Length: 584
Image 1: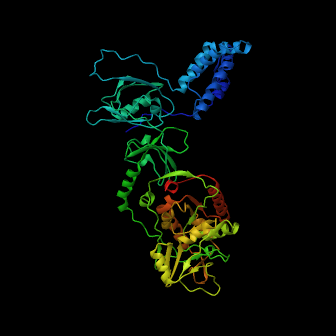
Image 2: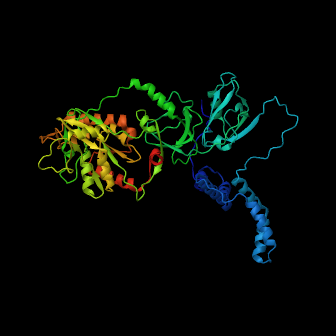
Image 3: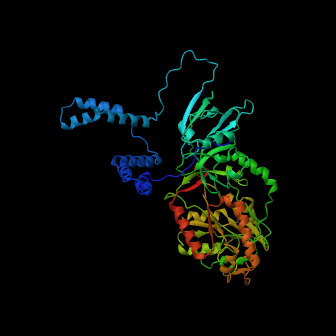
């Protein structure tokens, strides 16, 4: 369904335009008399005052001012009556004279009309002899300005009538209150439209200038008063209405990117919601596919999409090596070539986002700012092997050991002489480890050389209980299971730069062939770079909707500073989080 458009343009400072006009016109004016007239006219102080008032009103219109009172006329009358009963003096006489002036009364009357939004004329009563079978016709006159009208039309398949199909919330038609869904359009600027296609009507509107007159037969159906939407959603996918064949009107569509926050203005249509970008000063809404409709479309496409397994190298970079600092140990991550099992076992409380996590559409969100007594949010770092996750974690921990903490992994292998229980690892029996697996106590676990390794839920809780920010490094498929009210995780994706930059920045870096054996480090190979890039692309494609922040680790110092700034803002600024985290 095409959109009724009323043109576009850009704002220009009217005062500056008028002030510069005489000088610009001077070469084209023949007589000195005409030039003097222009200078006098555009230099008139009253004209300048009017223009300044216009610009002030235009500024305050954007601020959406709210009137302090709606009955200034009545208040002025009451004041005058009260003053007349008081002993007369010069100030009272001056105020009474001022309140009695016609221009002041007119100004107060206009104020009340604007405050009460009483813009329409008082219509005469309906005649008694009206033919009840005759359709009631309404003539509407709207001034064409810089914005679209904010309505879509369609042709009734049975009657052939042109019907208003949708009113976009906040648009010109909606604000006028004169056009409604279901109204039948008969004429546009005196041109009958009964036998025309919607596209032809749009062409008529495009050629129209100034005021546009519509002849409409009002819909019998009564509309419920519209309320501005208070629901906010986070988009989990990119959307371009120009590429959507299903949208009823591409011009009325709202484009957005993954991660954008949208305010839902209407859900009256089960297939097409009306929304606008959060914080957008433009009140007009646009069409977006509804959650149910988008999930259904993605589900239908899903058999065509082959989910590729995530290949991870069996070698670790030297910048991901274990740090010898007491209390620091990298999160549990087993390579796929080395592991027998590498699983995520944290079963979270069921919620809508978990049920539909594999069909990312929208997530209802609300602003959240950490309060002084709140626990710190869990910070989850995700990225391909070799990208530098653990070096960034190490730099963060060293920067403030009292503020940041990391989990201690569990293992069933024997403790070595130089190791302390609870420092490098928490050493437990194989039977106890398997019991904990059955009881879903591990976020991730796996088996390597007949020994189990795992990161437990309690190890995360232990760090948070010490009033520290827990830095957790996990595989991306685990992230959705950590998104709970308890942890409120903030997920940061550490992304590698281009392969050309990797060849330069990792030229002298080393990688180690396993996580638990002291094997010689080897230089990065071209295969390692390609695998890192490919792994990052797959992570971003499949799990990018779960990431709150992406940092490219091109230069370690720059990436660390960006990470540190992100952490500081996380503790002070408001961030959008799932509604379920605050209302569970």
